[in-house]
Length: 183
Image 1: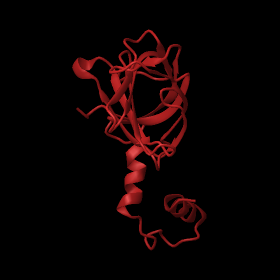
Image 2: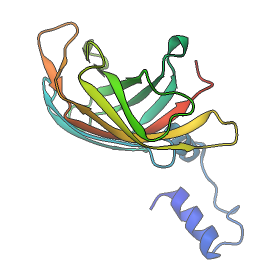
Image 3: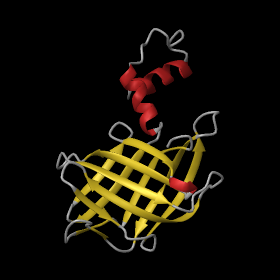
Image 4: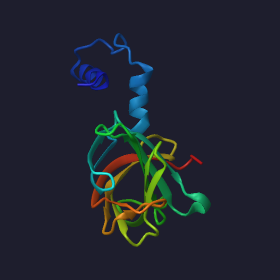
């Protein structure tokens, strides 16, 4: 059980006086803020990179922001692949996602970056991938920060932009962050 979960359990059960006697480190607080309380990414990759990804909020770095000129949003989910030690970065662009969007299906453009190795895999347009957004949840009172959870489905491989190989991502489940105030 993480320290944050322990603190919450103590507070809820009344086993601790106020919880103030259990310090929360800046690193622990940052983990919660990095990808929200429920951040995760799960997928199997095939082709040029073959691996099973099962990342939790403790592994992930999540960012999300509006796309240029108000054309939807861009979600970024990144972590180190435990098998290879290489950082993998997923960028999921949802051109049809707006401020008032809720659970629905959206065409998507997906890019996978193998950081440090200069390899990029990307869909040429939004015709091959679809994101089924299952939940959009406000994270604070500003109206800018949201948790976005869903599943990405691609019917064709992501070709390598600067090479001859490709990656298949048949299904990718995720929960990440979206900040409408970010630029």
